[in-house]
Amino acid sequence: EASESPALFGDPGIHVMGRMAGLVSSGRLREGSELMSFVYDLTVGRPDRQARAWITMFWGQCDVLRGQLEDAVRHALESELLWIDGGMTGPARWSAAAATLGQVQLGLLDTAAESLDRLDAYPAEPFTFGDPIAHRARAWVRASAGDRGEAHDGLAAAASCEEFCETC
Image 1 (cartoon, helix red, strand yellow):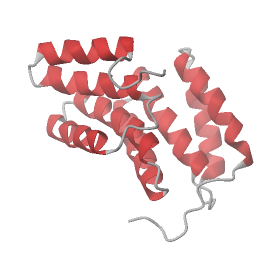
Image 2 (tube, helix red, strand yellow):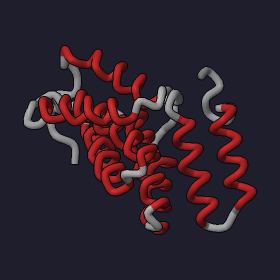
Image 3 (cartoon, one colour):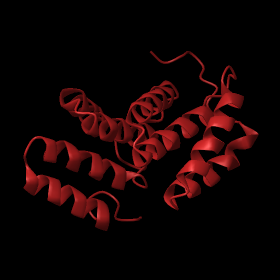
């Protein structure tokens, strides 16, 4: 349930999020995870939840890539809840995608399908920047269900970013 007045915006340390995104996307996963752990500890208990939502979103994605799947699910779900609490469904989609990826790789196929349903229920626009991870999550769920054709299509969409990310 959303809080009455979420303190979502206003953290002067928001610039750190760009560094975290860069570390994850460039494959510097250990360094990214260490930075996220440090910064996360600084955000716990603060009224501004934007920084923690970004951190846990990137941390979930980083954990998936590192094979830390239980951590990926925990971080991604925390991020999704923080974004929803702040009324930000776009980034919540990316968090749900990371949760889906972790869950399907853990063999939690029903739970992954539920996370994918939440992802698909969140409006994509105007937050299409993170849709490649959503396409990958959808592909993993389809592959786990034995639908290799749809899995292939999802991976192709992630690679080309054509289906939802025409402006990426």
